[in-house]
Image (tube, rainbow, N blue to C red):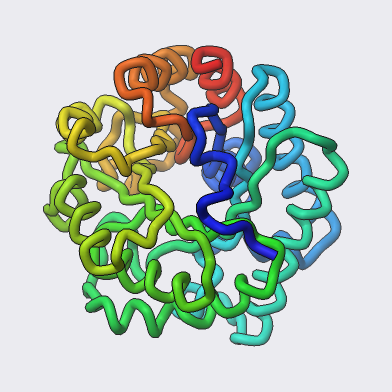
Length: 309
């Protein structure tokens, strides 16, 4: 049974870690092929399931060592109809894999003891997160995401986390779909090097629009898939963005277009990344959910945890 959004432990002032850099780590450093950037097919084999367990345990160990909480992110970011169809997955198979992903996380949480641990059902955009070829309106977005949401509502997920969204209308649809199932939901937008969403909207405008169209239902907002250097402009607005609560950062300073073209991983500077996120936390204390996105691994997560604890 999902938690009521008012009872989510990460909505306190305590720091929680979140990690969504697994896919780039698997592809670039472990040479594991993930067609369509999909990690949920790993659930199909015991070897793949153990690989997922290892990542969950590792980020939990990092959090525990620094006395922090942890938000476990499910490998279901592209486990929706249009993203899965080219890989040959049917709707029934997607339902099963979304369900199995949350069950695996619940198993790990139970086995790892009393560490404050939140199970997040991770959902992603229908189209390219960096350059959507077509923007849905909110009603179409709600219809599209409704199927995955209905499945996740039957699991032990504590909340829905919509990551790497490029425009407000899709976020509105996701929030409305979650609300119909009484699921807590957070929205994480991505921004370009200028601090604006890929579609040109400012982060502040996007948050305000989603809140106004959904009666403020989202539990909070985050930014992901951007380097801290790219957040200088939007962070100037944080006094007027109290709803911004998390930054899940890229290791690389590259633009999204450059990352799309990259043939080698840019892991940046793990120590510097940890220090930058700690600086942001000190300057903007409402930001208490921190972690790593593309190009990061447990080195980055360790430096983040040690600097913000």
